[in-house]
Image (cartoon, rainbow, N blue to C red; front, side, top):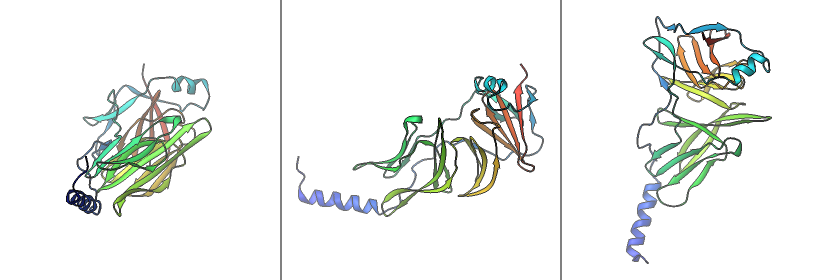
Length: 251
């Protein structure tokens, strides 16, 4: 059906006016976050110290084929939990939605899908997660497959009526898990622990082979220690002296 010319003109003016306005987020969404934990925080009795297995050793293979251990802080105790973090794959905006796709080794992307018109790609890389600080939108990408291990942190910016992506940090390895505490991001890749404030690396601790291919999946931050649930156990990182420890479950 052909619309009358006045109606077409009104629609054009409406869409043009809308495209000139900021594209704000419509609603709050869930990201892994934690209130600052201080004071007397203890580890559950289930944990015992263990050595970090040497890469490709029998102990490493046992951990690599073990259970995924998720952690949380409950009543001032670091415990094992069976509640996995929910990844957010879609952010709703006033003009449409930003959608991330994680296709693993087959690749993924980040796209903007408007309410009206055709969508377009912001990042042609495998998507791994969003987070927001003070209305600034960030996204992780990355992949680890065979000889490839790479990752990036992007900021998604609405400018001149269109979303675009600006890469702000080359992570050099696939992001595995992350946590927001106030405005500080704790991000674990296969190779490093990053502490990122806004869009700058405040601290970087090299993991070496300690948790390589043991897939950190959850984080608890207590004072100057970062705990990470992983496959086959839990890691601890002392941020002051940059030492790494490992715990397993008693039985």
